Amino acid sequence: MISCEEATLICNKTQYKESSLLERIQLRLHVLVCKTCGKYTKMNTQLTELCTRAELHSLTEAEKQALKERIAHSSGIKDVQAPDDSQP
Ligand SMILES: [Zn+2]
Image 1 (tube, rainbow, N blue to C red):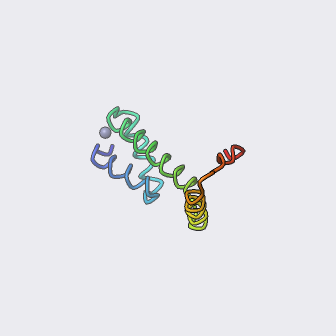
Image 2 (image 1 turned 90 degrees about the vertical axis):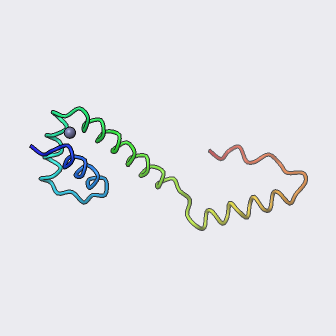
Image 3 (image 1 turned 45 degrees about the horizontal axis):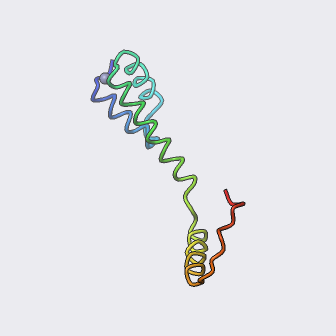
């Protein structure tokens, strides 16, 4: 059985997809018996998922530029119409 220290290390490596299959199996076995590492692994996984999702919704450079131009354009006009509500 691996130690908590090793489990944490493997958990971190897993987040960066640097762990081997054997290491991931060892980690799984460890979290089955160690509640502390189980909690840590769960938190770490959720954090990674959150980062992955945030990445998916980040704007491209072109989209950012278009948005900037739109803001600059609308702020220069006095009678600004309400933004298009059809946008999600
Ligand atoms: Zn542990």
